Image (cartoon, rainbow, N blue to C red; front, side, top):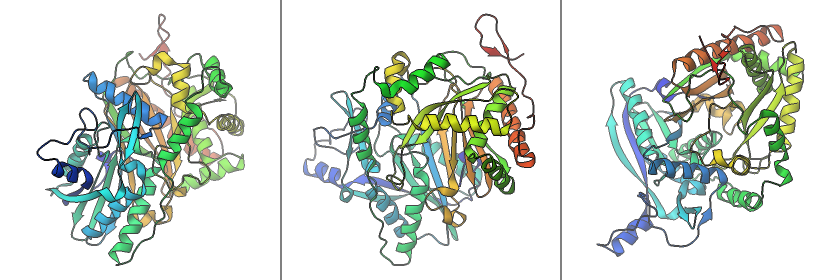
Length: 506
């Protein structure tokens, strides 16, 4: 299971069907009060009518995400993004069984049944009752050519996923005589990357049981809404003097600012957003990845530490600092408590470690291990809350202020349902309308180590990110082959302007 742009997916053509989620309670209310219209839950919403009163409170991640969508919509400058997953079903599709499996998924996870609205300044998430929902199959189109199908799905996800409108996801399938590709695309407000394998496992397991005439029994997982409530209860009242912010404050003191800057030239101007490049490639094949993992273990490091250390060395070789500082998303699912729940269980934390010239692989790994351990000891404070308290002026903006150093790693072999991935063949996809920097995600699966990057579409960024990816591939392959760092493919070091200190390229 790996992540790459939907445009890279080799989807066979076929007939596209979607299952539209609707509220039977809202329809009943509309019929009972006809011809009066059903009032919208919020301005611009086409969601079901809800009773007045305070609903469940959204998480800090959800509140910030929704606020950005509100403000950008009001400024006629929409910020849009989605996460999607696809998987394969062999044999003729049983449409009724799939419909019931999809509805079962929505019923088990409260966050997928939520609509969001402002109440007295707070963002409330009101879940609809599972027995008030139904799915309606809709024939969308039939495609004879794979390229046209991919273009349709990309545009469909862009049009149908809207943070300010219910429902917050779309579900469908591409049907063929002997197979089907199922797709689900979500707004980030209801899920994260680790939710995708949970979705695949639950839908596939229930579909197979229903197709065979069985009665699947899947336990209801804990609700993300409970997690959000507990998080807000613990951290809404903290202030800037709270000692739980000491790790953040010490990082900021050494970094000089809240956000760690991406140290290479991307050719961006301040306060400007750009169209994106979304690309992916394989850094190590399956055999190389196994050796790389073994080399990391020999120096008491985990594979993600080896990749992170390699990133730091490549950035330094390109003219970046010897001390790596960046943001790293970390799961808040804990040790099993929320492993089967769909939601946005991600905290973003700063990490720093020494990757200075002259340090060998074992020394850099020891530094990464120490930096990661220190970060994990302070993971409890939510990123959005730290941002709001420690960088309030930047918190008011709709995006991060400049290109930020960001690293994400997932081992998909350890996620729920991984033992069936050869059969289900799941893939994940992310998309964003615009950006002002670069983000890279790394995935380890049975086929190797992969990289997916989204970055600004400028000539400088294309050159910088192309060189960086080439250098990183050479570095991790060198580790697998020689057991340590070899000098990576050289990136053109940036020169700096005399006035601003900003890196530029000749």
